[in-house]
Length: 379
Image (cartoon, rainbow, N blue to C red; front, side, top):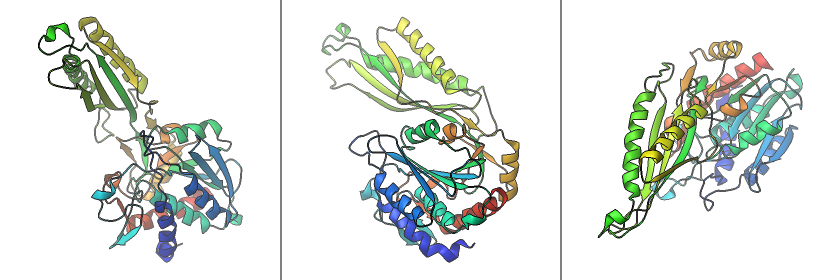
């Protein structure tokens, strides 16, 4: 099968997917349903006599499972239907309208990851299902860009176990066999308000924030002692993304909120990191007048690692390149509990979540060839 022969058909599918606003956000006003998109995808597959199962995740979000045959085994291709929010004013084109510019396709989700969803829809529609010895399936999940509720829900409800799962995040068509865990945390620092003419009557939460930052910087340095050279950044990282507090210069600040991000190595689990940070907070509560409290913004995403040598050998043989370990996180942390799994898809992570997001056609063509080759070996 040649992808370029189907390019116009592919662009029509991708155009339709991008037209659906499926932004996921912790801001309720921005958070959009993916049901209309799934209606379109399900209708597409039913034209080719695929089986479909819808799973309700929340009142406005669902997962869709599609398969040539409702049974165990075979290949499961997985991707999420949601995108990050975007500022339309900063784009050169309408993010919800697909544009073909030179040798790339531009639009919100082209890289992350509606471009891959359109690819597997096209690919599966061209297969001769009757000739397959094992099923080919697809999972269209929700809320990957926020709390990964879709993958968590599917893991709890999945009926069928494939032989191999591929998540089509953008890896430049190289097999990713491990990634770091992800933690999003909120630290609240409570002080006591007072008039700035006599600040000693108050407890300044900003002073507490400075104390915490100094403590955290020492912790960050200690994280560099444990190294895994398979990763481009070979140690666990910590980032303070937000410090928010205070009202006016003449009021002692009574409260500070800090948002933290950790990317943990497979050898240093999220639970271990959370325990260590909690111990730092407990010690600060003993030595400061401020009150410190740490909580999860949402559930930790654990590190992922594929330990199945046969899967790694197969992918490296088909791709003709070594497998990788990456610093970001995916739904693989959850779906890998169902079957051997790797992350493998077209496009570059540098274009994900970016203004004028795009994917190059030659990347899609290569991904199509990889899917075709793998399906012949597995199915």
